[in-house]
Amino acid sequence: MLLLAMTMGTAMAAAGVTVISNNGVNGAWIGYDDGSVRFCNGGGGTAVPFWTTCAGVLEANGSAVTDISTNDHRAWIGHANGGLRYCKDSGSDQNPETECVDVQP
Image (cartoon, rainbow, N blue to C red; front, side, top):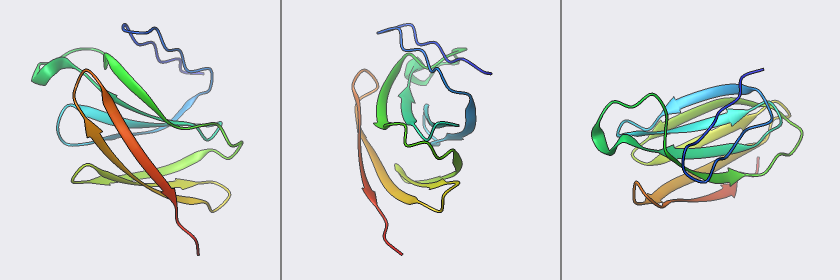
């Protein structure tokens, strides 16, 4: 089991990480085996061994995150049960924000 610790706000992920997708700037979308997703920023453009600020994007739903595809501050998030979500990141490095919607088949 992989645990992810954040230095600001001390957030610990209880579930194992299944997917990490870099957003092309200095952040990443992180998916977990319980279905939860976080979007994390940090470093201010410098290399750091961890992301310093995270926003909870999706609560655990019991279905593992199987894929995260990102482009232009947007992410498609797939779950093992066939669920699909479309999310957008915004805000600042110190205060990341996200919005997500379920995609219906």
